[in-house]
Image (spheres, rainbow, N blue to C red):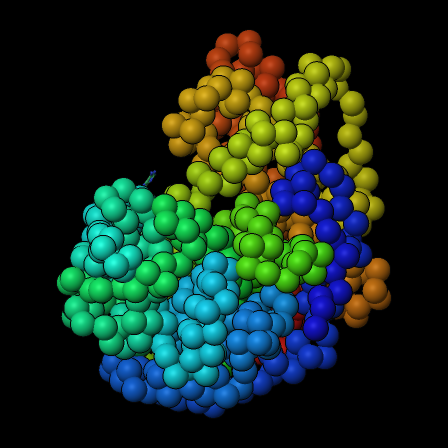
Length: 589
Ligand SMILES: Cc1cc2nc3c(=O)[nH]c(=O)nc-3n(C[C@H](O)[C@H](O)[C@H](O)COP(=O)(O)OP(=O)(O)OC[C@H]3O[C@@H](n4cnc5c(N)ncnc54)[C@H](O)[C@@H]3O)c2cc1C
């Protein structure tokens, strides 16, 4: 199955170029096959997972294993695995629609992600043919449950500083000693991708079977949420690992870890998008049936505001994850079908994946918080799902690289690519500086539909380049230690990519004559309108930290000139979205 996306740009080049709406991948371009597998997944989750959430929360890991078996029967565990190893070798758009649906049960989604993304994927990317032949078929069929053991109690974000040791033996095998922490599926996993310092300081990845002597798991963590997902320490005590179970090269474990996370972050973003859609449906249905002051609360402006905003933000992140899936799929399609090419495709879109991880996780938290609020007192008690969704989602900002770490990575990767010359960052920043010092050009404020929003996005790109360019000039090589500036830059870049993805999708809907095009446009307009305010605030704060006096005044004047975005009536637009969501009883776009 191929994804009909024609956007084939290299990673992050959207920052420097105009993009054609017809080229980006959107939900409207899903094929019948994508829709069928999405429906199959949805039915499985609704009929077999959701009725059993309480049993999962009571730590019934036999049931978790059984549900993974059902996923295997439905083909869901082999989507990203080559056919010769029992998989279906389908595109990332398929993985996206599947994880979006599985997200309704966050606990089971974590078990699924631990299996399909965190354990199978590193084998697909870096395994030898013998390793793949031995381990991928039982993972695809769920005969084995997988886990990914990177974090330790003293090294989470700083994962490469792991203390677990692997000491080489005279016969070439390794002896593993150490303790991993917070491992998803830890209580019942059969196969572990483990990271350790080989021969003292060579960070390396190993494939470890739980049945081997010396492997054990500690007690389940008492967590804020995800009670239906197993999270335990894993202890390795003199575990003998055969030489052929080194995954990738000795000393190159960071490649295995980081490439797995590059894709994992995109996938987590997709799960969060699915979570938003599910919660929005619950919120809309509750608002329609809950009456106060003699009328449904859905008729109150304050509630319509919430539903409209939840819809617009969901639209933006959904647009960006679909677009990213299309980009990754196009890159994979154009490459040889091997693990190295796949890893290169994930690395190419690592900036977009980090954006997806941060933006989608934060929008999900916003949506779930508003979902609790719309449910009032019922949102705070366990009889309704709003309370569990809210607790379950909080970890998304912590695992797969915290949002702070991902915020540093987004501009950090761009700057590195710019300095290497693979992105025209330096030239674009210089060009922009000349433009900033030139006399102001009048900007049109006439409303020509989404052209206005597209011009606003073009302005956001200029602001991103101005902030990055100023930061590179001000701090040079020390920029990597200026975390506040990098985080502001990340916020602007997130808005560039999210807003552009939303506007292009809305334009594509308009061009295709979609009957819902006015609602697409409403969502895109809200996102851009509010994005302009966020971009301005982040840019002002960043520039004020880097310049002062006349230089700062010049920069702020330029910022005002670039960001001349006329506000739109978002009250009306949000009401349109809210009313449509309530009428449908769920997400509309
Ligand atoms: C439910 C759950 C499931 C998990 N599943 C897995 C799993 O399957 N496999 C696995 O290997 N791990 C797993 N983890 C671990 C998770 O990946 C780590 O918790 C995460 O990477 C953060 O590490 P930490 O907890 O040590 O926090 P720390 O690294 O101590 O971070 C604490 C705070 O400091 C910030 N911070 C840290 N370093 C920097 C820096 N350089 N600059 C700025 N800010 C910084 C962080 O952003 C954070 O806000 C899981 C965790 C949880 C809670």
